[in-house]
Image (cartoon, rainbow, N blue to C red; front, side):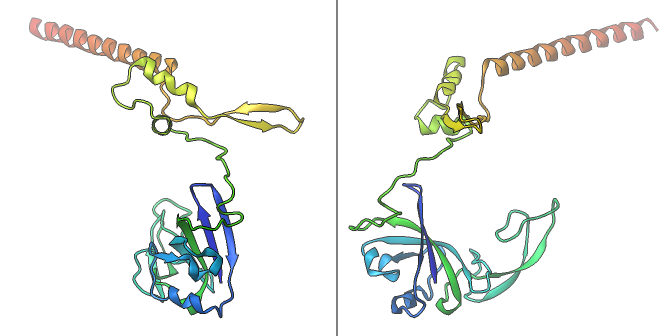
Length: 225
């Protein structure tokens, strides 16, 4: 059996293969997705660690599905956006085989875990390293949240402050030159956005004035009849 362990705090992942005859694996029976298990289930070097189950696969490759309360398989009608189904057309639905969220050790091939609590000993490749994120958040509101910037009742100057906090990274091109790149930040309010908004507002007011003038002229024409 294989355990895929992730440590979101450090950005690291580790894949561990365990002998199926290991007696501690019987503790997985009856556990569900989102349940927490001690690290001793994997091996003695993980003593003191606590992991949360996030998913897995059986020996035939069928994924575990949250909300299906059985340790066997079920044939479900899946919608676009569901796990284990990629829709090729808008609104397409398909009936597919999945496995329930209750773990049954003899049928499992892979279990996905997330580190919840760290133990005393360091684990090579999981807790002894820190992998920084290459790309920062793309949405302006998430950039404000990351750097504790004000998020409500923002003035024009406060909106533009976000531009200074866009996380950039260096990319080496094929010719060997390095260039600084940044993601295209969504919902970033700039001078161009403000000018466009004011221009649209002026056009709307002109259209309203023109409509009222035409209505008044039409009313005068009707009054002469």
